[in-house]
Image 1 (spheres, rainbow, N blue to C red):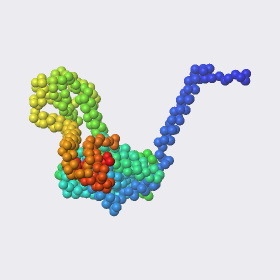
Image 2: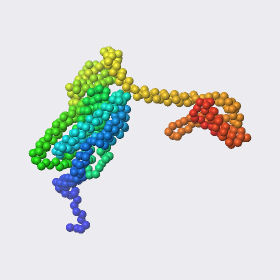
Image 3: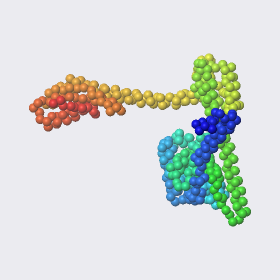
Image 4: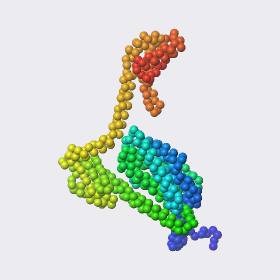
Length: 480
């Protein structure tokens, strides 16, 4: 073989050998990607199981400092909910020791630790009772008992609350199992899971005698707590935490059975609730989309709509040109073609005459529609009021700055014999953030006046002008 001859390339290989070579290369790339993902997401080797168990057990205890911290943080959170301040509520959650007993429940079930489970439940009950009592006392004595958006938002769980509890619980237990501490992650989870506001809302509901609010808020807290505990249970099992060993094997088996039974009892209703909330959220989302994109008719406008998942109904109020029954029938058929909206009744409200005037609707419906229209336009009205007030203020400035220069100059000549000449103009200045118009007077003083006399007369003249012209801001400049 000639030394200058190059080896054969892949192009000269038979087709079957080429495909085998490509397959080997693709397999190698896939193996490298899997190795990279495994290395990126692997947490077993960096898990400190013994220290995690010890830390969780330490956080379960609820007395002394933790009790006082909880009381104070509940007061702060109640104030934030009372004034509808999200920042204050978040600040309260940062200092609240609510997570310990809940994480303790999940971990003790996973490792079959009955003593820790009992301790976790007792401290959880104390925590809930003290929190509700503190919030109840605050709202009972508070002069402000109005329903705020922050309070209303905590009266019933949604799918978003469940998802936040799941991922927040996962983040918390993963952070706790890592060697060392990740305080910022744990505090972030304390914010995300929002266990404290529902307990404050329970106290609010009891204080005003609204059992629906109290029950709904307690339900929301229970859902969050259950899913945080479930997340802890799952992660603890996945990471292979050691089971508690008992001398008596019978007791160990009985303990394992009790723990498993508790896990199943808690898990099944939680999963059912999650599925129910997911279906309800999907129903509402599809209903909104159907009303916005399907229910369109020239000359007709949707002014109000509502939907009820339990009753499987969508109510729409139309105004303008009357929609024919054939079109409504078509909408109903299109509604049945959507999986999430099957068996849903479409109820259309519109006027009896072709004009579809709002006067044809019932008094109750008209009141509801007008209320909705008012609420939608309230922000716009407030913005216009602010603009009007700003313009009136500017006009007032111009009115105050309008005066008879002839009268002012004659009075100045009588009062200040040192003035030789007087000028006036409006000086427009800006700092690139705002622009101001400043009345400016230029004064020429007589040559025989000393510098000290000019300074004294200038100050007196400036004070006199402010009183005479009723201006807070003006300038007097000397031209000598």
